[in-house]
Length: 392
Image 1: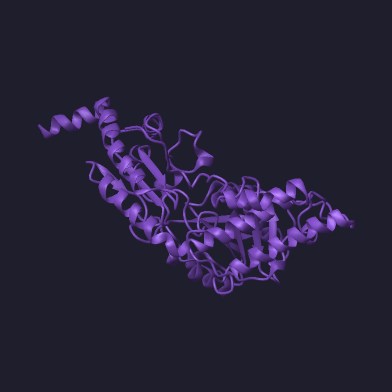
Image 2: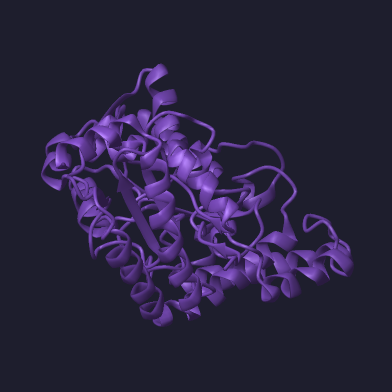
């Protein structure tokens, strides 16, 4: 039996019908420049500010704390560089992050190192949880920023963000979290979370690619990343993408409504984990329970993840080995390596990220398809031949 199954929602999601309907008037009727003072401009401005208010309502923050950006990567760059440059004026030139961050964070931190900042990359345990005690030791009076992602994009592990924020603030440092994967999967209340900045991306929650947000807590002053006109309260130059902002707001509302229904997704996730790890020499990557509802990351010994993906694709299953932003790289996952997975085993990982749109039949099809493909690939491996010989 052949069917099409999309199990790569951590990479991107299809635009929902509700979001398309929300955006269409912005293309057909309300297409004015929100900076213009005439009627068409005011129409667009009203839609933009309404979208900002709706996003703020979901996150329980002030609309003035929400800035629309082009994507999560831009938001990450703005938060990290903006905070570092501003805090440098106060003699703080140290940044703390984790070894399993998205490359949008890691590469930004590496860029800061070239400018004279010092950066510490905190270890994680075998489940991918940041070593909080080690982080506490590293944060000092010289620390400008602590940047730790809310939930990992590859293995799905959720971090103790509130505790990390308290540690950062105890030393006067700012706290930023990349919540791109967490939004729509966990309840996020910015009134109590304790972070100073948070990033999110539209295309992970059924909005278009090309829109994101950065939350900056009122009273936190960071440098601009994009200079230009007076858009976004003079904080981000460039004509605002009104349609996509409206689409983001609608997608966020719809995703948040469905959070109480995620038990069904968790049940399908757990079924995938239970059945697929019955395959010999396989292992779940990431925390067993404290992980994103739809994330399954399993490592298989004696095969290459890329080959597994190609054969799954031929069977109609869209999956990943890890971050979509690194899919062209043949290097082993930096996340798995940081978790202590040996280099040769890190190459055989499979990430399945399911959603509300995934059916029980989809899950069954994945389970019945993965095992024979793994067996086929292992039968082509000389390393597997050695394993078989040892068992005889």
